[in-house]
Length: 81
Image: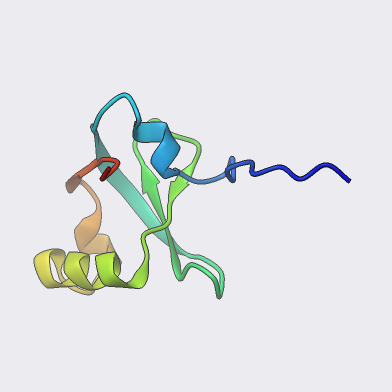
């Protein structure tokens, strides 16, 4: 059996930001899975951003806890070396 380490293609991964940070506009938030609580949809993108719990807490502190209030907000995602 060959072992591979493929990133999930339905979400943004750190490897997507090797070339630098990218700024997106939030277009919606849906309930995710037990593994990742929410799917945050980004304008013009098919893949979801699935932030971990700590980032969700930061977003709630900054933007509030109503997902409708997040629509139209801009977020810059980057890879932290």
